[in-house]
Image (cartoon, rainbow, N blue to C red):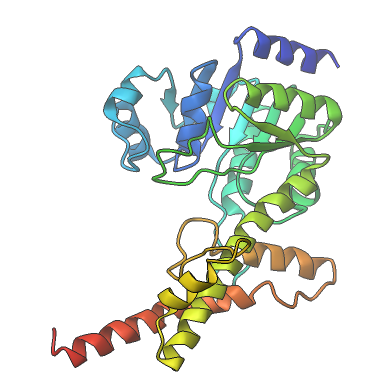
Length: 318
């Protein structure tokens, strides 16, 4: 298709216009590294965030003043300024509602805004974590309905689940492995070449659905692993033995996964099991273990607090 060939040629020549929507922990690194090769605009509707970034100040502490000063990102807050984009990358939050249901309002708000400026001949890439099937069943159909345009004919869609680890100075956007997917094979190939320009290892997914699944699996597995050792810690406490010693002894076996008890934080691990649970329920499957780990990890802070307070009381500390 001519439009995809034209965009691919721009990628090869480093003459591409990219816009990144959402400049938080995920979006700013995405914009930062792509700006080393291409013309990049970073958009955030938080005007204070944009003002700070224009003044070379990153309150998230992802980048120093000098790094931002050397960056060529153009920081903006109006969607009309990204109408000339060849590729739009969305890095928006996907929190849970109070009822533990996926809250996708930030993505839909962004989709409405980009439809207004026109999506014809553009490639839209989502990096946000969503439940499996969200792109095919919701976002692509929504764009078609709102724009009256057709996917893979008038506009194109891709997915690359984010793997940013906030505060991690070693595993940066450019040296973590990226998974990419596209609305057809030509789009997949284009997105693969795009990310290969700035990321060391890029892996193709056969479908957007599979790429969405991969992200949810990663974090749900980590939640389980931490939940397991957290529950071991609780049981050891009941037996009045040190979990640290028991786990250290267990770790002497060559294939033991050496996780440590602790609090589960971050933007994804505490949420993604609920996203996978939601997707499974939608197709009629009732998961048996998905949220077991989540329940343990949500209880663990209370367990720790009780232990600390007991220790303070025993030592007569305030």
